[in-house]
Image (cartoon, rainbow, N blue to C red; front, side, top):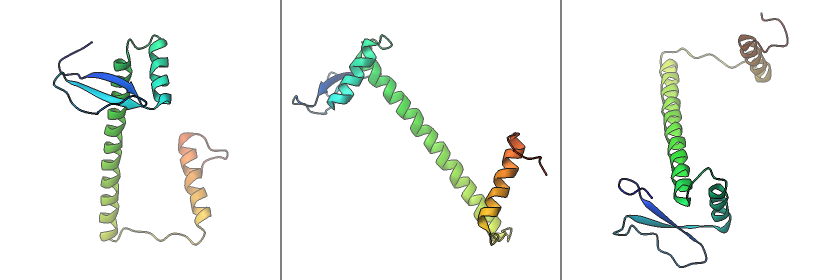
Length: 123
């Protein structure tokens, strides 16, 4: 088991008494539902992971990566909203057509054309 910058994880099931505390031995006790405990055990039995600790480390790594991507996506969305608001301030807005469905279909058609997915010749 790796010791040092990594934490040793002791997995306990819900039925047993536990505390989620950081002990002097640098380990964390976590409680899993029976379903999650079975899933972790299945992953270890598959041979892909050597221990429950490895499964939990990988799960946390994936969660961290997802959180990082969500943060980047949110920052990109904020930038686009700010750019849109600046365009509005400069008077660069356009009115929506009366037939919004038709406008949406035109936009989709142009996008499909650009991707080479259009069912009809591109205009």
